[in-house]
Structure formats: structure tokens, C-alpha cells
Length: 429
Image (cartoon, rainbow, N blue to C red; front, side, top):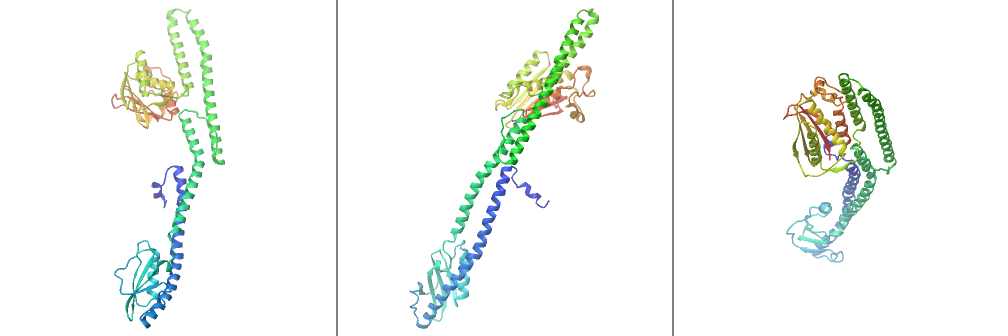
């Protein structure tokens, strides 16, 4: 709960989080080592070197105050000049310069100013009994030379380790991304060849996914074979019934023939539901041309259906199962004209999704009944008058199966233009 606010700033992908787990400890360790080493090691080294140099400076100053000159300055590589400093300088990143200045003021009596313009020379102004003098000597004598080498090594080797870890991490996460892609494709009705690889845990997840996919495919196949077999076996007695009815008088034959035709239609609907959305292979197609052809076919059968707005036309193709999408749209259109007077089919295509909308001017479905209407064999008497049609409650179920097989959904709502039901098949691209 305390760290809940961090979730808004954390990466959402597994790759980003793994990289963050890898990089943060390395960078933190480098910062800690750098700070401790600079504050402790360099500070201690600079303090000891400055105090040793202060002994030589005091010796030179003592001889100067006694004799007015210093013969020890030259051998000790110290330049002594009478006068004062015109300015006192220090680079902003010169951390050791603070320690040098502090120690010089503490060890040299009369120290007035310290000028450290660069890393090569240092000038110290001291007030003596003979007046102010300026002592000049090399800066490396009071602080460690090239202190930046530590940071260079840390950053260089840190980047090298991050690069190596990045390559290793990418190879470890590649099987997980591959598994996610295969699972996502299977959710859209596409079967991609996959062989588990990677770490033991990833391989176990891969094998579990393959077992699950095989069981689902077997279950779908068994359902299709069972319903297809039942439908096929019933066709024979129905044919015999038709032949027997043909021998009856016309007055007695007509109602019985209508019942036989209705049974034949029900068998066709059951068979269509059994086939589901897996019929046919997914292929790239133009959704506008596909829907336009469906509407034209429905018009030829005498249905009052028209083509609505086509938004985003020409923006690309979508991978679809033509047979499944056609069956879904035709079922929605059939429901629309069965329970209403007319239907309008529109398409909207964006970079992220495809939406096929079917609207009618019928009574619609109440919001509390829409979930129930999507179930197989559901027939809502209050919303759909059965006297106006002879549906068996599979039209919306078939459309929903097709949408799910493409990785999408079927949404029901109220049509703002026609006042009836609005059914949207939304498929992600």
C-alpha cells in the first residue's frame, strides 16, 4: 500500500520490468561505490598529501622569514614570489579542492587565499612577517591525480555489463514473447506452429499451452462431428417422410410438409452452429468489399437491408475467416429483418480495430436481457416476438463465436438511428 503510487511510473511490460530490475541495482551500486570512494578514499588521500606538503611549505616560509630568501624552495620544487593573489578560483567539480583548501588553512599559519584554476598548478597566498608571499607548486602533490579514472572505469564496465545482461535478458524473454504471440493468435482462431524453448519454467508453460490447445481443438472437432452426424442421420428419415407425404391428399399434406421443412431448417441451423467459426482459413481481405457483397446477397434474397456508412475505407486489410464472418453477419441481418422491418449494415475500420454494425427498427432487447440473449438456444419472448419468426436462438450465439474466434467481441446496444437493436462485431487488428 505504501508503494502503491509507484505503480503509475513502473513499466507495464515484462521486458521493461526485467530491465529495470537489472539496471537499478547496477546503477545504485556504482553510485554508492563512487560516493564512498570519493568521500573516504580521495578525501583521506588528499588530507595526507596536503599535510605532508604543508610541512615543506612551513620549512620554506620559516627560512624566508629568517633570511629574506629561501634556498630550499627550488630543490623542493616550490616557487616563492612576493605579492598577493589577484583572484581565488576553484572548478565546480573539484571535490578534492575543498579538502586541500581546508587543510592548507589549518596547517599554514597566515594562509589568506588558495587559487586552483586547473589540475596542474596551485597557488597559496600567505601573510608572513616580511609581507604577503605567493607559493606556487604542482597540484598533484596535494591530491590524487586523475581521480576521474575511477568514474570512467565504473561507467565503462557498468555499461558493458548492462549490454551483456541486456543481450542475455532478451534471449531469455524471447520464448515468453513467442508463447504470448502464439496464445494470442490461437485466441483469434489462428494456429501457429510452436515448439517450447527457453528456461525450464517457460518450457513447462509452453507444453501446458500445447496440451490445452490440443484439448480445445479435439473438443471442437468432437462437437462438430457429433452434431454433423446427428444432422446427417436425421436427413434420411426426413427424406422418407417427404416421400410418404407426397402420397397424401393436398389438404392433409401441406401442414405436415411445413413441419418437415421447418425441421430441415432447424437441422441446417444446428449444423451451422456445430461448424462454429473455425471453418475456413484466415486470410487478408478487404472488409468493405466483404460486407458489401454480403449486403448485396441479402438484397437478392428479398431482405430489406441496406449498406450504411463505410468509415476508414482503404486504410488496410484485415485477417478474417470469410465464411465465418459471412455467417455471422447474415445471422445478424436475418434476426434484424425477422424482428424488424429493415436493417442497416455499416463498417468502421481504424488502425486498431474493425467494427461491423447491424442495426434494425425492431423492438430491441432490454439491457438486462442482453447477456441472456447471447447464450445458445436463448429465446426472449418479451423482446422478440416468436410469431414474427421461427428462430431457434442461435443467431447471436454464432455471431459471438465468430467474433471470439477472431479475438473480438459481440456487443449489443440500442440503435440511435433506427430505434431497435444494434449489434457490433468488434475485431482487433
